[in-house]
Image (cartoon, rainbow, N blue to C red; front, side):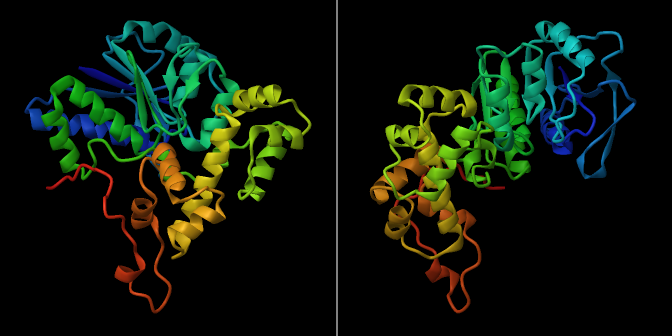
Length: 341
């Protein structure tokens, strides 16, 4: 089964190495080194420079004679280099001939520019989500998903999520048991808890480039304890409620209410990481009606509870406080899959 990873100049190295390692390990576990034929395809050069000063020898280029491809994955380029018309033309010609195709990180921009994603559900790296929503409003973007499957298409958020994507394809090809063995070997969750929101910085990828909408966002971030209803926000910037909601969603791929929840959740995350404040105080500070409202927001936007998040991401305890006393855990932890080697 031929897996081709189209790798643009400046490629995110882990977008290649992560999936390739999964497919290679699966082949070893199956006892069939030909189970996956992994090829790196360049956009023209004999080698591809990647992040971390790594260089990859290309097995093929887009200018070589066509050969059958089972699965085509487009890796990401963190620098957003100019989209090459020859690469777009190649994708438009080859994607219809493969069994399944997808992208990792910003590779989704190439597929979108080629017109291959209209009406599809996709994801990309959280840092690029705002730009993608603005550039391709006809495409349904989920900025929090680790990866999304939509028919023959599968897209991943980027970097390590390419490993999640590859594990899901191994499960599809050879069953859950094989995929679980590979996940255990790589010390990975078969399906990790939560979405990429638990790793993102302070709404960096979700700020509008439109001045009025950005003004509303800045007001939200500075006044988390206020009511922040859509009517009030629209009035603050002199827009009608309907037009404000429409422009906001077009610019950011989310509703104003969703942004308010994300902002409050993000502020709560930082307090959970940096302080020992009780949940009740954090909820009040960040504008939640109560702790239960904060828990629901965490479950919906991050996929884990506040205390579970604190347990995973809290920084070192203040001097003089033992960490075992500093940490607070809920009685009922969210269900998760434990991997034992």
